[in-house]
Length: 236
Length: 335
View (cartoon, chains in turn green, orange):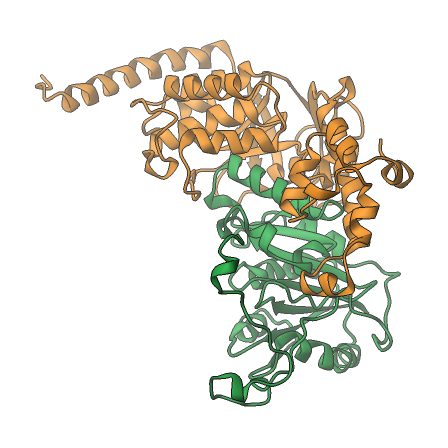
């Protein structure tokens, strides 16, 4: 089975891109399944079901979504193997723009959209910077020049990635992406022992453990203070 | 070409002197190199503590690899050499949706030529445009092949983000950035690393005003442009500033711009223009038109002189209608 991880900010068009890409793969008689990771809510699983795609969803709830991802990915892989899938796609929203549930040697795709603003590539961390393929969506609603500027900004923060434009509504570009997702040789039967491409943000403070009261007395663990004193006014 | 070895030898100042565009890389990756200019980039990367690396999500080995890739891509882009110039595009026939051979063998389109594409919705126009964009090599559902200058194209046309074969002018030409026309063009010119920025920007605004009904200037916010002005700006920008040698046009709307001049501008910048349209006066401006049916090219029609005469008639009608429009605008009677 092949495994591909796809992530990107909420509403960037991940699900639309995946649906159109799988549509193109079905013509090649490949069986593809999706596991959707989200935080509080998703009904994307219904969209996949409607398209006849085997799907599972996992909501992280009060946990950090990507910690949740990494503690479940092995079981997810085993689910895909039981279903005898040729390709398993995991989809997750990089909710803090840093999260990147990418695994070394496993293809990683980041989906971002043209509407998200010219400085967005600069703001997104490993989720964009360590992806193998960056797909840019919503190109049909912006000008050709904006598409070019946006792509060049992506290129400057991740020069080694393949940058592709995909239209999630018409599927333009999705066939092309599908050709890059499946390779017969990329067979995996477990991700046990593999490593993440980048460490996750550290947490563990009293608030992680359910504290709700505010103030120094209640803060324990990983706590950091902003510099707000007058002597710091020169700090930009 | 820059290599890891060379990167180890050059100081950051030397890098900037040799490759001024690296400043964009430092800026976009939020690398504050100001106090490290006399050291190498590798030294700079090594100065980060474990804590910094985790805190700011820095991947030093990736930054190093990316910088090398970035510099080499930019060198490539700047030194657009003879071999990069696209003189012709050849489409080699594949099959339609039912697997039948297409109704032509091969079709070569040359620089400064306009080809129109006609066919009902869903007939396969988008697939043809996508085949061209992807430089298909028999590996798409139509099995078509695309050749550039008569040869199998370099894969860079498929995968590089700065070296795209195709620029696409879609029907929607909205702007979403909150910038003035001048700032916007400057940003685009920067991303293309053009040298004579001022004069290029001047050229674009003039060309755009030549196409648009109402004039605008460099101070106008792009989001305040009318539909016609946006289209005019976009076409002028694509013609003059975009590096892509092929322009795909998805039906230019009639409102607010001189479409004939728009096509002349694109063709004049030595581009290959491929246009999906069902407007007779646009279709007839093409030298040939591709007819699509059932997912395949059914035939290719040469525009004959007789057909071109219809164009003269259509032009007359256009003039009549725009005359009426003008009268309405200035409150004249239409009789």
